[in-house]
Image 1 (cartoon, rainbow, N blue to C red):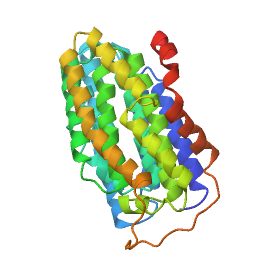
Image 2: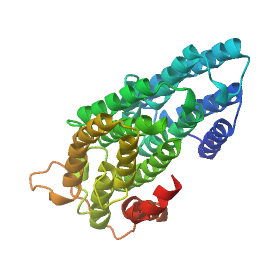
Image 3: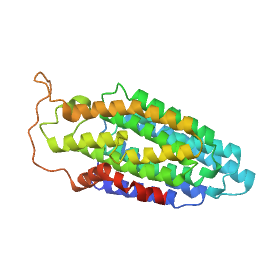
Image 4: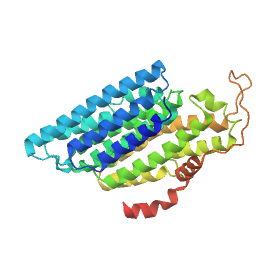
Length: 346
């Protein structure tokens, strides 16, 4: 790829995201989503590997279908109510269509099938964009229309996402697929609280973005695409591997790390809304994803590489990780003491 193309594509992603999150009109929001889709496709397929081309094709087809549903939903609502304002989504059929469209764009169950395959075919840094930045515009649309959405439907999709994200990640060996199922599981936590507390849903997404970005950047630094590569990277970057273990445990939601904060606040809010069974169910389902985070953490630090390993041992390097990685790693581990202040704001 031309070296000048990457900055243009990244700027296009920023432009598309900004247009969608700042718009009040459905057509403008749709335009921003389309700019995002067209800008990320060259980044997915830039290696020209058949798997990368397949991932880009799958991504384009699913996102095109979701965008068509968004347009159809907004046109149905405009036909029934005369309103193109995003916050004025009042028609029941339009609400259902929009929920399906955004679920496809985010990768919520039962529209999750494309997400692990696309992440597996993408480079690690493109996978980071797909897991974080590309989810922000659709999530913004859900937040703006949260008062019109069906709580029972979102709760069902959220519990199914938490269950399937944990269950499907159990026997994965590829780090990108593990993080894809981790993303699906976290989306379940965001979706279940969206109708009752949009601010808390947004906070959960922000913290998920920080933790996932830190993990992706650490894996990119050690060039770990699967479990065996994580296993043999201890000799190369021991400090980063130890930090990676803490970041993975934070992503799992264990106290006293940052990831415990959103789960704690969500369970508290669900209990206030008299949804104790749903809170218990999603808390129990998070144990499934805890298992594969622990397995990845175990591979990254606790197990030393065996002598019979087929992988070449890598030389120890004293070059420290980049400043953004260090900052994100610190935030993904140390933010739990701010919980009282966050709770007062939310």
